Image 1 (cartoon, one colour):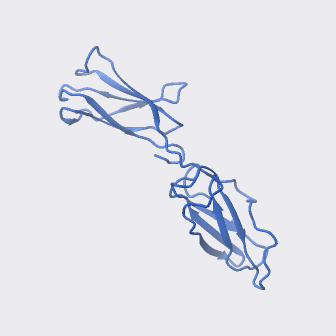
Image 2 (cartoon, helix red, strand yellow):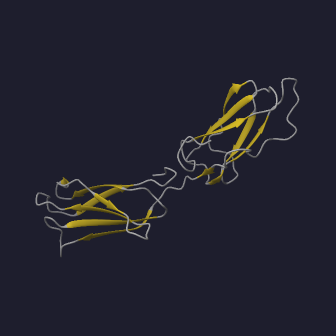
Image 3 (cartoon, one colour):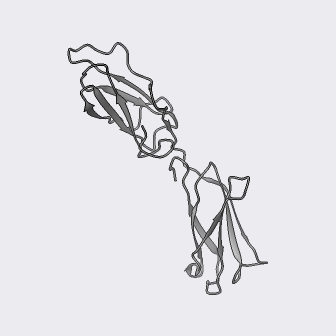
Length: 193
């Protein structure tokens, strides 16, 4: 189970539940990231949740490779009999995929509704073209002349049929002359910012 939303990414805790057929000692599990290498943080937290039920949890790190998470668990019963072969596949639920790829903007354009420089009541629209599907961006606007714009409300949109996002702000008469600046952040469906 993944304690985050969507695919697993940096900081998400992945918990595997083991239900052996009899009482066993604490299991030993190793985990691999999507590149089939060891996880960046190899610390596994074990818990006993019942007479014959155990959990093994690991935290995904930003350095873990994208792809399907792998694991291998073994244990012995209370008489010391080892499991015949390691557990390497889930029997319920679905595989966990690591997605540590942070979205970027491959193209950013800025436009103004009026002619020439932006003036009072002109709308300045920023169009972002992210590298993957992202949620609504959060943008702040400023001018080189005096910092934040007077009107800090931003209108967001997604042009139909594209993966682009727009952020628009209206210039106010009180905004200082200068270059319009912006800063935008957004996250993908795995929570990567």
